[in-house]
Image (cartoon, rainbow, N blue to C red; front, side):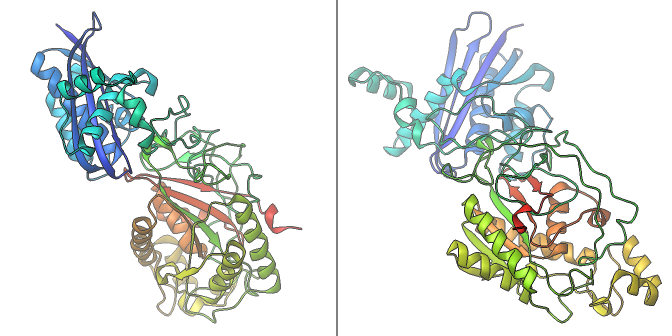
Length: 486
């Protein structure tokens, strides 16, 4: 049986932007190049272009010998992991391409291997030649580019001339960076691996309990969400953690944490990193408002109560977190819940960062009905049956109506989708409340509804979720509030 090596690559100058792919089929025994393929795709993303390169390489190998064994080598960790079946494919543009690629050969005839980009130079060159041709209004052909190389005084391949225009995609959340990116992609510091490195949100990684942090100071543990599940430490809730309303949340046991490093949204400042192989994510940095008079008493304080303003302590917390975010230097926009405590917190941060505040109704706190202003103990005394139902069922409503956690989840999912679309590739601060933050984290992690009772969020705490083009997300929660203390 013959054996082929398929090397494939794709790129986009803009992500999405003008895109192309390249593929080469080699004889596995001799290393001889048997055929090359490349095509300009018009406007597409890096990931789509990489999948198109894979598909072209497999088809070219099939045309040579449909009974051959094929070993695919690519520098796209995303494509290799998804095609190997270790990661889920969620993005609607990539699902049909992956299905088509799997149909070219029987699955037992194809294997996949990730290789560093410097070992994929021929496919990379072909992809850049295709993009160069597209810029001229032409389609790629071998004769066109061999003629170009013969007549130019510069022998450097098209990849070296044009590669710097390619937009960075970076290593996935649960893998350490294999090597520094070359000029062909705009480099961002790579994310962290399981139990010790991080992704955007330096990539968002997850722990069980959350709090605030001084920029660059707090220990964090990375856990990738969606199809990427890293082996980071996890925490277990204390016995009383289920008896928690949003303002009345007893502390859950935090995970053991380790320091991590990661990439950054802007190469000039420490920030919430983006991962090179997945494109720049929409990173939502989640800030809980500062204290109100109800916070120290742990009273239910939703969207249907008295709408309290910040206390003096809460305003001080907001100023301190504003200073921490200014030092980090990565926030590009601010969106806030319409309630007084979040608008006031957002205003203090916005003044420090010289940004405007956009109000988003979908970020408001849950309406706790007749429980507004009460402590958890008072609710248990007055409405024990309603409280027990609420703790057991996300569809249950607080006494007197209010909003169920299931309804809050639907609202937050729609708000998330809206914001991710609006802020793709950017880092935006969302100033909101306990339940919205917990819900966004829960949805990103794919955690069950009862996980809401097993997270603690201190006043003015920071968390972050990065949403990638493949439909996956990664989460970073912080369990330190040193930025709030003098």
